[in-house]
Length: 263
Image (cartoon, rainbow, N blue to C red; front, top):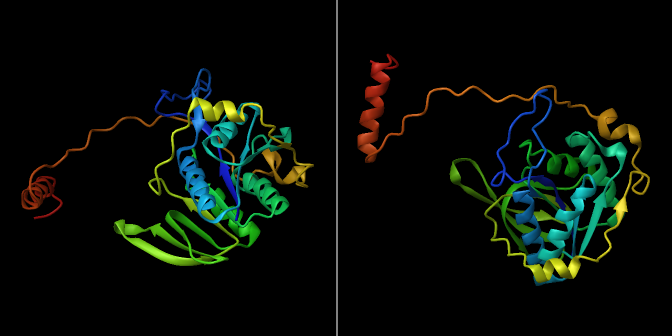
């Protein structure tokens, strides 16, 4: 099975204090520590496990500046077979749709059976996977936390749905899946693995290599533009109710009565 996993280099929130810049146009990026997006890391681990069971190859692809190479190599050290770096000045400023346009071209170029993305990236929109599937006209499922290969062209997938319930479905290949955290436990990446891929050539594809018109990506093709960043003002803290279910219910009723919400 030929698997492509879309990954992204993002600020590591566990290592950084995120602040808005003075202009209110972006976060302050100087001296930030970056890593691979958490959801994407789970997707790569799942792809490696599928490959190890049924054969094939795992390729990781990422769109971004020169620094993006570090997360591509990191996922190759984890066990991915190949890496692809989408980099072109024309891609800078792409919105979710523009990113999906570039990824669609790369998918069609490589002829992949299964495409995995993280359920969401650092902007929290969770839109690229669904857009990519629509553009490719392939079946799609989001928030996937279980994958089982059941046939030559079928998967059994589990999804997290409202109320903490689990939904299982059959989906046909080729397809696109957005992976939820918790689907597995991503393996540790050691120094030996990093050294092993340190000199591996990672092809760089520009828009001419994947036949993407410049006007469909980047700032020119963006239909969504960020106009402001700000830190919300802190309100009053929440009150945590403790005790048994009955005690919490009684306390909640008292609070609602004191605020005139119920009589």
